[in-house]
Image (cartoon, one colour):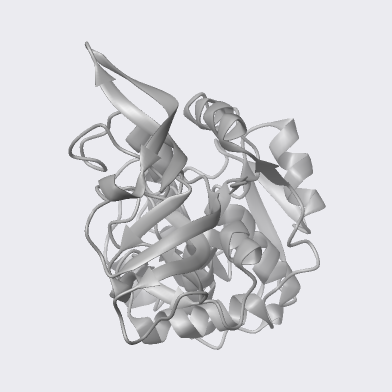
Length: 328
């Protein structure tokens, strides 16, 4: 079968992306051939489009680390033709052709039946929403009540951060969002945040081992100096759940004191290879009790041509909100 896809090519000293026609015969091996109905844009997709070898080793390549659709053919006894499925994580869109194409072929272990969640909703969440769900879950596992105080969220207007804000607001928590512009501030407040701080205010430069206790807990999507500062500002017994390193991979100025004097917990989240049991728990919560009335806010639905432009906006740091790709 012929289908359309965004394909990234290495040309000269750079990388270019084009919409091309492909054949399902060109897809990699796997027990499930899936007709993709929806995908979404994540930072890893932008990195893949830029030729980042830490994400994608060889080109040409089709990005899209999220995909939701219908099984066309199955060589697995766990799935049948016509089953609606969601595929996130593993190697999809990184070194295996992903959801920016109208068809994918994947191992059966990568797919989850979309029994409790609508496919479009799953792609609005996508890897970003699923990761946000894991971050919130790590905080809630410590039995943190809303009255414990404010929760700080970094990268609050990005894919992961915006979902985290919406979930926490839905559950009755007071959220303070880290923002970098007036547009981001307005967006965070529209999602239900009770307040905002700018990026400069969120980073300490004194190097002190402990700072004033300010936040009940923190959800961090950026890492670097922000993460170091946040750990030193969390109240006694609080949690810092982290998943990103866009602001840096080092945690300078951090000592053991927040952990041994304030019992602060630092929890890392890696969504790509989380267990099937964890996936089931998170997806069910996202579909039901965590689904916010603000769920559809700041969602931009595009076709393949629109996704080409959205990738450029993400690379240029001009993108606000969540971009969902709808295939014809």
